[in-house]
Image (cartoon, rainbow, N blue to C red):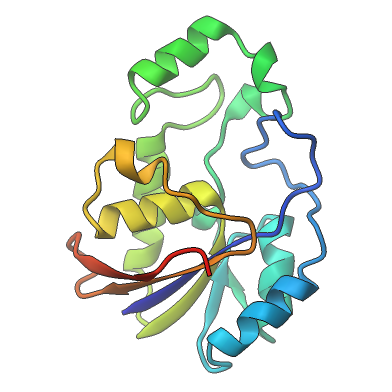
Length: 183
């Protein structure tokens, strides 16, 4: 399977805020869609997070995109909408000590995010698929199929409006080849 992973446009939120699953408006998806459309076939299905910043880009790329809530960004629960500096330092330290399993108050762990995203991918049967989603979702897909450890995949640079390509041999096993990153 070939996956084309596209990050949504820049959300309209001040820098330094935790936004996770907040349904924020974003910059105009038109220029990004115009730039990326020639790189993907019109026949390639588009599957996207239903959050507005991803949904609007998916709709600009394809006449009939599909949406799946399992592709939403990680839920940061009570932290969402807060400046990172306002979040209890002890909680941030606990998250840093166990980044895969720590659950922000009212949110979900990175492990839970990974489980729902991989379940979403396992339910897809198209030989080529465009996914419009969030940096965390794209990083963990790349990390899983390229068999990177958390320290590597959590730091992958995924720019707003960027396209990354991945060839996956078997959806049930971590094995893949990076075709390109951040086009």
